[in-house]
Image (cartoon, rainbow, N blue to C red; front, side, top):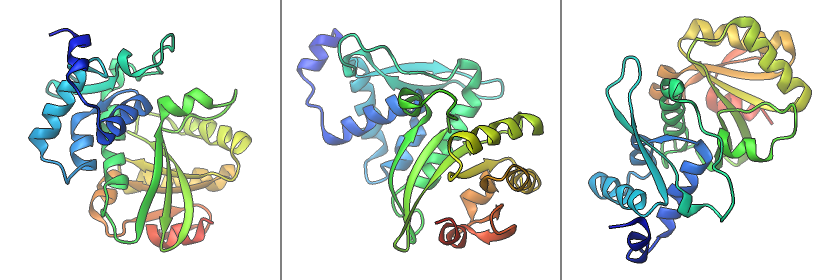
Length: 245
């Protein structure tokens, strides 16, 4: 069956459109991100549905492997989902697969409905979408997450750090935030508590608001604790949200 004929027999649902937009926004998205975000859907059904969207050209499927990873499926927006003449959005390079998976993991932790009773994610955008409207010199966070916490609204510029960037590189990144988005709150999700503490200290040094924690802490805590550069203290994420606005 051709992609055109597959589209003829496929009725695109609101959830399909949400999946397509997520793939556009992230550039590439691993399948487990969607099974986490849509836990109310049967996993097998969801996987089958995404394959149908790929066959119809709404999604693009790639099977890739990392240096220490088995081959996995990544999904991107397909040509059929883009207006005629619109170029494909930015996508992470294949060499960044471990980072791509980490971003998907962080998104699942933050945006899964009911993950924490006190946090409600109102919306999010990935780096590919953010690059579409960024002004020259703007930083490109991995995610922009808008949230409400016990009635208080705020947002995070999420930076997923795998420990591969040096301190000077991180300092330059934070300086870009200082110049372009000085009031931003940066949620830095990194490899361990010591590096989280160091990133928060860099936030103090540069003068930008950094809330830093490890991915393991993000997965485990309810709520997890962060090193907060504004209060120069280690707080629960809920308390840090209260202080951030």
